[in-house]
View 1 (cartoon, rainbow, N blue to C red):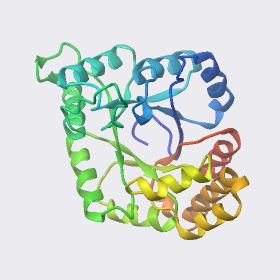
View 2: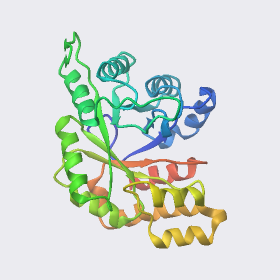
View 3: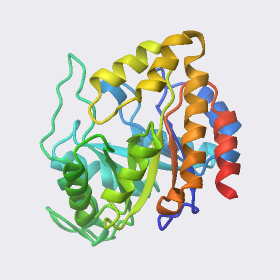
View 4: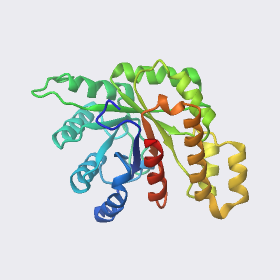
Length: 287
């Protein structure tokens, strides 16, 4: 990658702990640090209260020695607040950010959404040039700016246009929504071939059959193949294991087809024990 991460990077999504018990989180990260290149620290996932992504990323970098990408969301702040959070991240040594819209806040909180993700990316890029809406800043920031992207079966035109706009605004890498088929990955790479940025492909197994059903029916841009869903329905006791095996199969088939040449790494959104899959991915991508 061109973002301070090695080629064919392996990353893991981390939710800050609900109770701010970072010692438990540290033990988890310490156990897998040898298999990952960075962690992507979420910001109040599902719109529920968690410690801030920037503060959590600072803890992980300094207590665990693992590189981080901190999520900055449009949900929580107006333009002033977003600029302040970015400056705070820079002050704490958080150099990699993922600019995202953010899940809507749960009651009794309200979402802000004064700015959209394109404005957020531009704001971070402007700071890298030493500028803000309030004028010049004394020291330029040096953010590596990332963004999220949908994958097929979402609209090919929509995927291309939004990702190109994000790149033009200043994003240099993207992390995709979870991919559940080689066909989806291949189509995504073809659609975005002319969008020159580092592409990290997302994968997510299932914690339960209920979760798989919900994602398949309610999450835009994610489609679980019928044969995989049928397998999950028939073996409910092993849903998580089946998901892990399926992810390995996709990555293995993608390598055979030469698709891994078009990506910069893989990103895992995991539930349960991480070690075996992360170890496998790290070793597999070396070959």
